[in-house]
Image: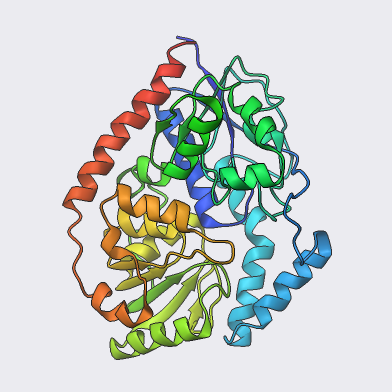
Length: 372
């Protein structure tokens, strides 16, 4: 039987654990289905939204300045900076990629996704307005997306920045479109007149906790609250509320992914050990999509902070909690943190949803692999 070569065009080089794990999860699913997998790179386009931090060295300097503005110890700030500086060299090898960039690799099937590959109206120069993230220039005979997201890009933003027609044209070139949230589905349907398929993120769909042997059984830390989010995203008032709860429960506050004002210790570890830290946590507070997912797959007590201001996460995170029947995990006020974290979560319904969605994911991908 001929081995199918599949390209994944995703956010695999973005330096955060969620981006890594979704890329790794999709790769492993495709390999289970008998495919040879290669990752495709893209040329970041010009940002439609201008960032006051600038690009290149000036942006990196602004990021470092922001880190030093966080009220954590100097040693933990330095650990975070070293984590960001060394991330690519230490962890991308687990995806089978190196520093060499590979554009439009030869493949039978190109899969765009998962993650915010369609989030084209944003100010991140690592992404920008990039046609390749919509499959432009690929060389595969079949082009599909898997659990792709527009993030906080909306129809109104596409119209405001005069790119709606271009995006429409690109979407119509797909042989099939799969999205992970209702905002993305609504955009696809309005632009193309066709309803996309819906699938959950690969970090939910690949059974990491049972299949991934790279996840250690235990971690050295005990009795801790895990705070997972981008550096400085939790305000001083929010961190004060988190610390009051942790102190009452005699829990240290471990930060992963970013440094925060209430950080007792910043953890720099490989992406697989991150899942072990989630699994061992007494409580979890997060304001990220993948932080919520890792809380769910490890069956932890957690709360998710949904934000509509700033970069915003309301479109994707609200949708995720609704799909998993976990809307009561949304933390609207930090005065409720104790009540929510101590309200036991019954994961039976959520697990049943995930199991059914896994069947849908494997069947969707099988459909296009069997066409070869």
